[in-house]
View 1 (cartoon, rainbow, N blue to C red):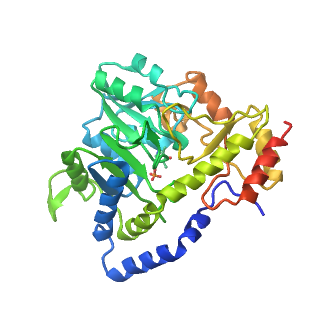
View 2 (view 1 turned 60 degrees about the horizontal axis):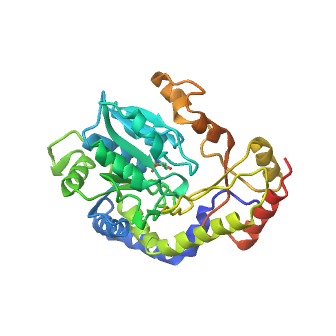
View 3 (view 1 turned 45 degrees about the horizontal axis):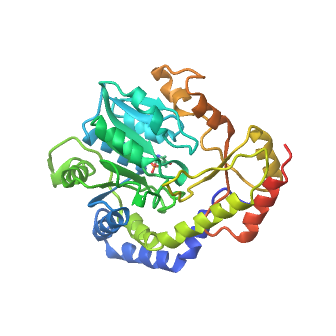
Length: 365
Ligand SMILES: *Cc1c(COP(=O)(O)O)cnc(C)c1O
């Protein structure tokens, strides 16, 4: 049996009865968009993250671009972001006409705090930090830099539900913690869903108005907004999964710890966790200069892998207009050429883990 890089069916089966019961409850309620499930989820998720408020939205990308918009960032403004992220982070900036300023990642695959200040100009308005692959970025340094230079701090937490730095949860450090609940994420819905976690009640209110066509009162539109509402079915199902987050996270951490203990091959570099940070292991990302051969070798052994991500945003066709060149961000580009995500998911059996470990350890290039 082929081992897939991710298995969302396993995460469903684990709590199948609870999910089915909640789904029926919502279907039978006769109320499907922005209702009790959404407001309960918003309360529960804010409590989980440790912010005063949470606003449910339609996707993680919406959380990002609407945050940038509502923080007053647009044309002529610059936002610092790491070069090796999923392209949605960058789109959250460019949808608003603002310019992404790429910074190289550190050895933990996250924004390198020591390379931020050299990129700050009078046009810099914000730092967008991405807690990539489930590990918190080094938020002590990054928060201090934002404070010192009076910059907004936006967190892309699409991969980091539950990850902490010095005991404080990602999504609670900055002006806006932007979450995706796309099915493959650590807190996954059964379709598209997202949310923003914020402390400022005015910003939360602005999000609530913006997500619903800019209207506070029906048919009275204060601003030009969007349709980015979270639906009741997704919110209800997310509430079920949220009650199990501790167990779900612990399970992934244990698989990652086993990988780190047992994987042993001089051709392969294992991921590291920074002092003070925790990872919830959205992905377990190894590196090897022999990536193509490793992918093929693992495929023959019926083990699937994914590259997160093969083309860095500065070299994407969509961003040709930014004028970046190959070689401009060597660490980012090196990661794009060598990273490989190996299977890790809730409900992964010990036997499946062993097959992955044995196969990688026997890889000879
Ligand atoms: C998934 C993801 C997003 C986008 O979330 P959607 O819900 O798919 O819009 C943004 N940033 C990162 C880092 C992601 O992994």
